[in-house]
Length: 144
Image: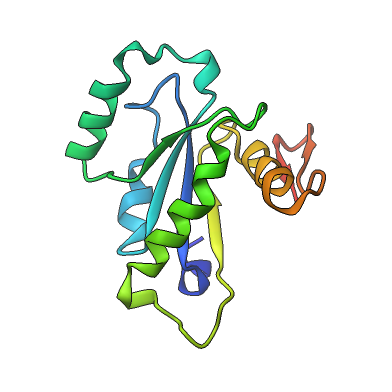
């Protein structure tokens, strides 16, 4: 992951909304450095969101200002991701590449948080295409 970060314009970290304040890999933030970063709290349909405002305040206190709650299986709130990522990259002068309109986005997260579901949902929403990532049960990870 570290070697690929040089080519990446923005990081999308997917995490389980049922455990928004725990379970994240603490090394992610150190590794990411100054790259624009979006935290996607997936599986919001399974989470208790009565404390959503407190969760957002706590995450903001930890330096995470760009957070979206999603349910990738039903494409809830997924349409907000691309505009937010575009804004993050555009407002980050360090990574501004005016001559090149293509961007590279890295999707990261611990196992079973919905990384493949997010990628597939983005494809459905923005490209009108089917699955890009299919599940490989024996490995327990997406195959792209």
